[in-house]
Length: 418
Image (cartoon, rainbow, N blue to C red):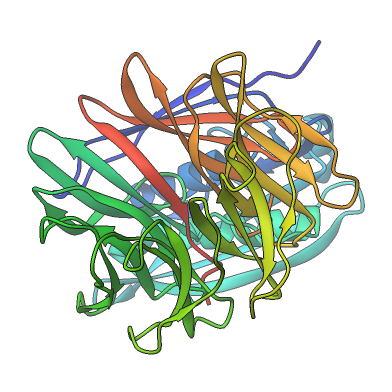
């Protein structure tokens, strides 16, 4: 029987946001059976922590959680036979204790049940308000030890929530929890994109009654104008070193691509065409920029050297392919394609040029890769309302993230936390 997971989780909302629900369907082809024993110590704190660790791992679709509800595990006297009988290949066990001054000490070990050996552990001191962040860190450790790839549970996502007369740029944990508003405006906010170091967002705001590109420092809340030329200023994309932005300007006529320094200085035209060039995105190594253009008669995806030069067409199947997003390893390209009147998320292997349709929805837009390349976050529409969704790069695991009575759009997945 094909594995299938269905979870519905409600996370506590902050004062800045409504509740966010996550619906998960599907699972990886081969899931690792792992048990997360109840952490001992401060009862309420430990329960909240283990709950987040468990849901993080299950949400990835790569793990099968072995029932460990109500089961503790003494790190010094592991009942190996019992856990093996439950079918666990790995077991995480730990404790939480008050460290004074409102701080806590959380320690845990990850154990290989089959080999009866330790796979490592950590001791983390944290404030009481950082339970979720600590849990995400533990889940990242377990994920990396058992899969060999870095986990993304400690990363953050940005998105725009639209309600009556109000647009909010929000930042949340990768699971949609702990949402905070970075900017609220009566006018639209679009195209948020994280700087490579995760400290800033570039976006387009219409608060001055025209589209202007801003760079917003998330720690200080300060921001500056990166592009405010005559006409439209849109579609910012960071260079991998964070020093430049590719933007789309109409200052000389039709929409064309330019490079500007991140402080807004030094604008230089990147390419010239008789059509509309837009939606630039640097390759991970910074060597080329993918973009959308109708220069060939229909919207298709092209690439150009980031220093300028010869343009090469990338997509040929179908009459509408837009919004290119290269994967973090540079080997594949996510984009939106129109097929039978539906706009769906597709993934191209850049080596073979083979394309796979990842979704069966109708109004997908704005794809954004997780920093480990395993999942792709995107916006879509359900019942006439904008929701966020995510799909694994093999199409097996799907998630929907929605906020009741509000449109959620323009998602952007942040980089690894350093």
